[in-house]
Length: 205
Image (cartoon, rainbow, N blue to C red; front, side, top):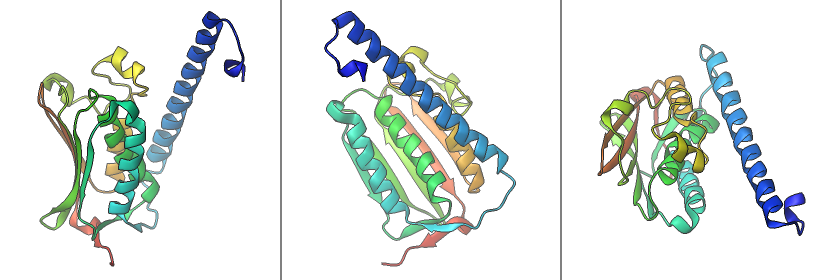
């Protein structure tokens, strides 16, 4: 409320900074709560639902365009319209959203981002690929650890919590899936989610 008032510029900037920090803490708490729920329920078996992944991804890509804003990342979705999954739609949305939004947050303005969803034999594969600065090899094995950051200051500036990829790993484990990360500095990164045959369903037209 105070940030909307006509205040001296230094006070106004301090209030905006406080608001950003509060929003960041809120994001961290939300991510920690989700991780806690995933970990506590890891051995429980909930009834899976049929998830319309192409529709889910279309919404997430549109959200990512809004997140990109003036940075204007070209985002393109390449999805098999008949390919779905058995699982938890809310959890899959969180995992896929983290991967797509990370690509927006951690690549320069105007960097192309492609999202692929399709079959790989009898399995299914999601790929989020960018042509950004890439990630050095020594970081790749640790990216899914809690709070691990390749560039701490840059991540904070872009609003990341350092928990997104850990959430992705847990969600994929709940869906019998795995994540593979490949990256070449200066050429870009690919985040690949592989889902087994028993999770794959054909969506009705």
